[in-house]
Amino acid sequence: MPQEDARVTKSNLPRLELHIPEPPSRPDTEVSFAHVNRGEAGAVRRPDIAEHESNMRDLPYELIRVLDDDDRAVGPWDPKLAPETLIKGLRAMVLTRAFDDRLFRAHRQGKTSFYMKSTGEEAISAAQSMALDKGDMFFPTYRAMAWLHARNYPLTTLCNQIFSNAEDPLAGKQLPILHSAREYDFYSISGNLGVRFVHAVGWAMASAYKNDTKISLAYVGDGTTAEGDFHEAMTFAAAYRAPTILCVTNNQYAISSFAGFAAPERLPFAAKALAYGFPGIKVDGNDFLAVWGATQWAAERARTNNGPTLIEFYTYRAEGHSTSDDPSAYRPKDEAKHWPLGDPVERLKDHLIALGAWDEERHAALEAELKEKVKIAVKEAEAIGTLGQSKPPIEEMFEDVFAEKDWRLKEQLRELKRRRAGDSAAGEGA
Ligand SMILES: Cc1ncc(C[n+]2csc(CCOP(=O)(O)OP(=O)(O)O)c2C)c(N)n1
Image: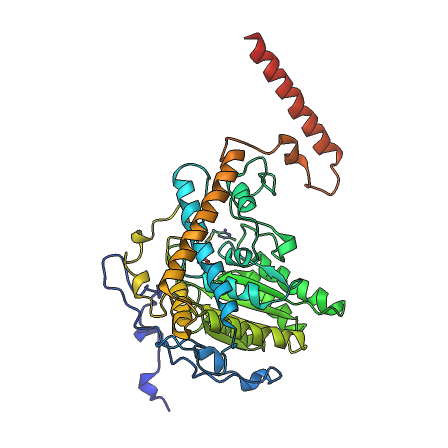
């Protein structure tokens, strides 16, 4: 019982102080990942997919890992994939990295206005692309291109979109890398963070309503969980037990803001699921096998009417946020090297070597092969044109605003043509 004289009164109240979260390290301090608890590979139990969520509330606080420090696959979340499947996954990841490096450079050469890499996060969308079925719909962010690379999306078409040239499949209407690929189960990316999380839930509800068998998958970054859309998606997914897998790709940063600005630092994003009444799990996002195993579990839950799962993929954004960002302004330059969960490409490669299914020579050959493939694709797209050198027909600008152009759009198009005709006539006269 509190003492009478210890009671807080107006006269002895301390002044209020606003808590400003502090990142673990700054450019001028030592790297610190003391707050990262890796746990032990293979140590987290894997409940039955029909288990009630009330019996899984410990899971968000554990980190699901399959690959151990000796590069072996251990524990109940091991999806037990054939080496050929792992090599395919490795290939998708190496291709993503080669593509990112080349297109980032293309930005510096003025060939595109913008680019974003997914370095360090390749395992997440590569494994999920392979683990899900054709027809399941993915609602990606801009940092999930390994999904397309894992499904052999034509590289030249990606470059055409990035260069906004005459062959751009989106006719120059979207910022580079905001791709859309329906045939690849890859929903149109939006610049507005978080909006797709809600769409994914609605899409999954529709699938269930039609008694279909398809499920949806959606991403938000750690920062984006602070958007209202995250809450709306979680609420609807829970209430309607939507067959969806909702993922937070926690790469520790939202541009310059560390993840502690979106949630209390000691609280895993996965734990947010508890408040909504469905399971949340936290998974090593740099572990291809753990990503696959967790996705399989969540997909089975969704497909058997056991409802949604929130997966936090714990990872690290190894490079800058975008071509417009310099991360050395807000974090130590060598922080990425110290990330306690390593590099996803290296870890899968080392696992395959440990299995005796891979070696350094084959890896070097794969890297060289994929670099060359990217180079050829970029050359092909360059031949069509880079930024500003080649453009989709201007009439395209008026297409697809509505299913059919209304009178105002028709009028505006006529006006544009009239002015252009006038300009060129004036040009000839001069
Ligand atoms: C609604 C909205 N607010 C702000 C932005 C600007 N913005 C673009 S990316 C970004 C950071 C997102 O961080 P996070 O969700 O952690 O994803 P990450 O980029 O780390 O993968 C911000 C603030 C935006 N695009 N949309």
